[in-house]
Amino acid sequence: MNFAMPASKPASLLKFTAASVLALALVACSDSEESAAERTLAAPLPDVAASAAPAGIKPPPIPAPPQVQAKGYILLDYVSGQTLAATNDNERLEPASLTKLMSAYAVFHALKDGRIKMTDMVTISPHARSQDGSRMFVDVGTQVSVENLIQGMIVQSGNDATVALAEFVAGSEPVFVDLMNQYAQQIGMVSTRFQNSPGMPHPEHYTTAHDIALLSRALIKDYPEYYKFYSQRQFTWNKITQPNRNGLLDRDPTVDGLKTGHTESAGYCLVSSARRDGMRLVSVVMGSPSVRAREDASSALLNYGFNFYQTRQLYPNKAPVMTVKVWKGEAGEVPLSVVEDIYTTIPRGQENMLSASADVPDPLFAPLSPGKAAGQLRITLGDKVIGTYPLHPTAEVPEAGFFGRLTDDVKLWMK
Image 1 (tube, rainbow, N blue to C red):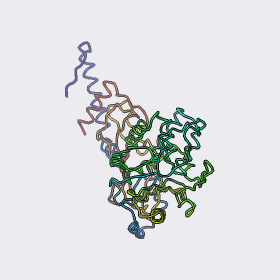
Image 2 (image 1 turned 90 degrees about the horizontal axis):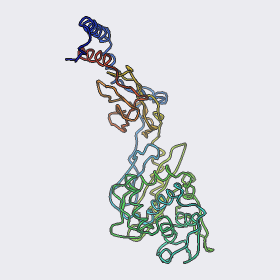
Image 3 (image 1 turned 135 degrees about the horizontal axis):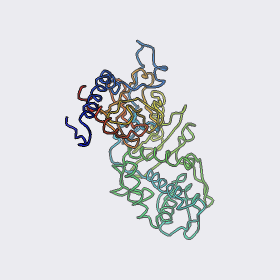
Image 4 (image 1 turned 180 degrees about the vertical axis):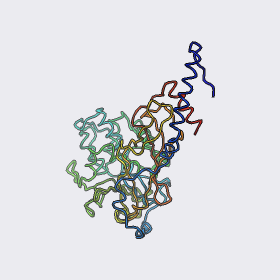
C-alpha cells in the first residue's frame, strides 16, 4: 500500500512516523479478531428469558385457524403488523362500504392539517342527496356540520354523508377519489383502486383483505382522536335513529371498531378491532353470506388470535442493541440502535424459541451517521425469520485524520 507524503518532511521524521504507525498496529492487532467477533454476536432479547418455558418443556401446540364463511379474510396484530391467519387475503374483492374507511382517513387528514374543522357547516348538494343505498337522510340545500356528517358516514354508513364530506374536502367527489387513491399508495395498499367515495359497485373499484387491514391499522395509529366514532352505538339525524351496523360492538365488549359493508355483489363484509390485556388485533372478513356469518367469522378469528398468540416488545425506540468496532473513524466503536419500537407476535409458550442476531458489514468504516443504517437486526422464531429492522449508529462518527486512517489500514492489512 503506497501513501503520498509531503516532500517538505525530513526523511528521519518519515521513518519515525511509519515505524510508530507499525508499532501501534502490532499492539492493536491482537484484539482485532475480538472486535470482528462482536459484530456477529447475537443481540440480546430483554426480558424474554424470564417468561420462557422451563428447559425441556415443549411449547403448547397451536391449532390451525378457524374455518369461516368468507371469500377472503385476514387477522393481524395491530402493533407488530404480523399476520396470524389469512385466506385469499390478496385476492381482489369488492369492498362495498369498507371504502368509507379510506374516505374517513382522507377527512381525518384534512382535519389534522387544519384545512377543515369539526364545526364547519357543509351545504348538501343534489349529488350528495341523490346517493342510493344506506343514507343519513340529509336534505338538499341544508347545512350540516362536519362532525355530524362524520357520524352519519361512520355510524349510519351514509352514502350521502360521505359524498357531502368528499365534496367539502376536495371540491368534488372525483378529486376526492384521486386523493383516496394517493393515500392508498402511501399506506402500501398495492392492490386497491377506488372509483367513488362511499363504495358503490364498479368494475374497477376493488381492494383486498390485506390492504383493508393495512388501512385499518393506519387509521387507528394516525388518527386515534377520531377512532371513538367507530364504537358509537347509534346516531340520530332528521328524527331518524340508526344503530351502528357492527353487531360485534354489542356481542363483545372488547371490540371497539371498525366498519361494515354490504352490497349484493360484494356480500357481507366486516372489519373489527378488539383490545384485550394490552393486545390489539384487527380482523377483516370479506364476502360472507350474511350479517350473522360475518360477525361469527370475525369473532372466531379474534378469539383465535387472543387465545393462541401474544405480542411482546423486544426493543424500545432508540435502545442500543450492540456496540461495534469502527475503522478509520475518530471513535473506535459506536452503539447501534433501532429507530422504532420493535414488537413481535408469537405463539403463546414459545418465548424460548426467540433469538436475535445482527448483520453488520465487516469491516465497518467511518464516516457513520445516525440517519443512515449501518446494519440490520434479525428476529428469529426457531429457524424462521419473523422480522428484520435497520440498525443505526447512536452518534456521528467522523472519518479520522490521515494518521488515524493509516493506522487502521495497517491493522487491517495485518489482520
